[in-house]
Each structure stands twice: as structure tokens, then as C-alpha cells.
Length: 466
Ligand code: 5AD
Ligand code: SF4
Image (tube, rainbow, N blue to C red):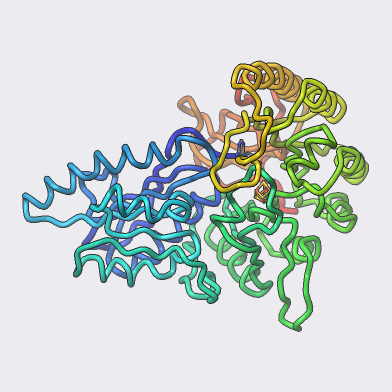
């Protein structure tokens, strides 16, 4: 779920003396981490900068999941070196930091190739950022802090900013112990860690008090979450969802990203019993071939995915699924690819992300024989994406004429419009008063466009929360 272009994080508007610019690549987890880095630096007097030019500190929060990511970081660092030199010539200082997964995986290389970088830090050490910034502003030379320390970083971070808007993200779990053959996450994000129940509930309540109506729980392996409860027992994700659904004013819940192996019956059942749990689940399967699932070390067969999809739809008939796919993993034959196509046909997806396998140094798949030729990968990806696109269009078109509840999030595309999200995460644009942002309303879907829907507001009154 990475995005090709960087996302600029707006940091909290507080009185400040210094300016911070964060450039974020990648997944929602990275966007969340950028917000938290801004939070830990706020007490040092750092407020938001619009551009690197006006910043006293620039953080590149990087993503390593796709190839060429590190090259983009190095070319950005080249540009920032010139800016840093200009500032120094004018008697100003600029602290330059590289965070995220590229920092984790290639910390030593960054220090060697870009010695003008002041701080290199991995995802587990953000709470130490203020200390590192203080030291970097005094001393010259880069510092590396990419070890996985034993302290739990969440406990050491200040509370997250409460005003994320109507849709808020809450990280409940980090790291991954699954070790899929192709994936860098277990190496860059470290071992699985679940936040305790009390910390999550407290943060959720703060988010709701700050205006959130929908909370998306985040984690690399979110449905493997098992947090300690105040009485010392261990809760599973379904138990946590029941508890979160009780929070007054919280209307919608989601969680992402899940692994098929951790979709237990209690969690599937929760989809039928918790109205606030939205009928949309991102459940990456990667391949439809049992042989490839084994080669990928996914630890389940296609059959488990079929059964899980069926059970989810039994529990919640309007359930829509989204997934991730990789084509061209080492050893993938035409027959394996055909099995993936058949899985897609059989399950049907409202949304999906599909990628050509790209070799990540250090992962088991990188060293495997039978790497698939680039042209073959291209052809398979094209075929798969055409089918997924068609399913997405069909799903969106099937919504036309339907009445549904949407959460209004902010200004729409055109004047007079307010944008919102359907229960199935589709962006939707509605003619409505601007102050509807943050409310829930009933709409009728009028039309499906390539990446959004348009709709008419039906109720003049805000809907009661779940
Ligand atoms: N090559 C291609 N796609 C990958 N993903 C993760 N690692 C790789 C890789 N080496 C995809 C998976 C995962 C998503 C976030 O990115 O589909 O679910
Ligand atoms: Fe990577 Fe697999 Fe873990 Fe997902 S489950 S983060 S793909 S190792």
C-alpha cells in the first residue's frame, strides 16, 4: 500500500521558533510515524514548514518496500545538500535526518554516501529524536541509531496529537514475525509488538475527543495483535474491537493490514456483531497458487482464503474485500499465474493493489533461482490489473442507486461540495454545507467515476452514531 509520490505531513500549529519539514514516502504507518516525529519535536520548539527552504530541520521519512526507493532518497539528499550549504553560507543551520525503512536497512550506506546527513534513525527509535537533534545541532558528524532497543518506544513517546480530523489512525501493533520470502518488513520493522489495551483505549478516547468519528487501527500484522489488558490477561483483536465500539461518539472502526492466517472465527464473527466495524477488509493474499503461497512462506493455502472470504460474507453480507498481489515471484509459472487469476475471479475484489515482484536484498526470495523475466512479469501484471480494474469498476457501478451512510471529511472537488467516505472506503463528493465535515449523513449514490462516486444528500439531519 505504498504511494508513488511523497506525502507532505502538516504538523500541529503551535507557537514555535524553529521550523520542521517532513517528507513522507510510503504507507499509512509512515504517515502516522511522521505525525509522531512532529509531536516529539514540538516541545523543542519545532513547528510546521511548508517547504525545505524555510525549514531548520528536514526529515525524509522513507519507505523501502519497493525498488528504487533508496535511489530516490539519495537524489533528494543531493538536492538538500546544496540547500544546506547555501544556508550555512548565510549563517543558518539546517539539521537533516533520514528516518524510516531505508534508514533502517541502509543506515551505514547513507552515512558513507551522504555524510552531510546529521541523523539516521530507524522506526524503533523515534522517541530518541529530540535527544539526537539536540546532539546533532551541537556536534558535527552523523549519528546512527537503528538498533532495536528493548524499551517499548510507544511508552516513551508523548501522547499523539488528538486532532487528526474525522478519520484518525491509531497504531496498535508494529513489526512482523511472518517472514514472507519477498518482504523486508521483518528486518526493518523488527519483531511483532502489540501495544497494551489501556494505552490504546486512552489514545482512542483522545482521538474521539479531538473530533475523530472513524478510527483505523494500524499494524503490519494488525490481526495478530494480542495486547495485555489491565487485569493481566491477553486480549485478541476482536475483544479490543468490542471495547472500542463502546466509545461514545465513535461511529466507525477499521483495521489494517491483516494476514489471512490470523483471521480467527471470533474476529470474523465480530464483523456481524459490531455495527461500527465497517464492511470492508484489506486482506492481502499475494497469490492464488498453493505452490507459490508455500514458496512465499505465507503459511496458508488458497482454500483458507476462500473459506475466510465466505465466512466474512456470511457474517456481514455487504462485506467487500481488498487485497495485495505479487506477480512474478521466483518460480512462478503460467499455471501459477492462472491460479491467481482464478482466485480473483472466484472471490471478487472491490479494490486491490498489485505489484511486480521486485528483489529486496537480504530477503530469502532474492537469492532464489528461477527469477521470472521482466517481460513475463509485465504481461502478467497487465492481465491481472485489467481484471482487478474491471472488478473495482463493477463494484463502484453496483453502488449507483444505493442509499448509504457516509462520513463527511472535508471540502469536495468542486465549490459547494463536501467530500466523504462510504463504508467501503470509496471517496464520494456531495453537494452539502461545508460545516458537514466531521458528520455522518445518509446519501444516495448517483454516479460512479474512475476513482470516486458522486451522491445526493438525503437526510438534513446528522445520523446518530452507532
Ligand atoms: N516485491 C513486490 N511487492 C512487494 N510487496 C512487499 N514486498 C514486495 C516485493 N519485494 C507488496 C506486497 C505487500 C504490499 C504492501 O507490498 O503485496 O502486501
Ligand atoms: Fe511482510 Fe509478510 Fe509480514 Fe506482511 S506478513 S509485513 S508481507 S513479512
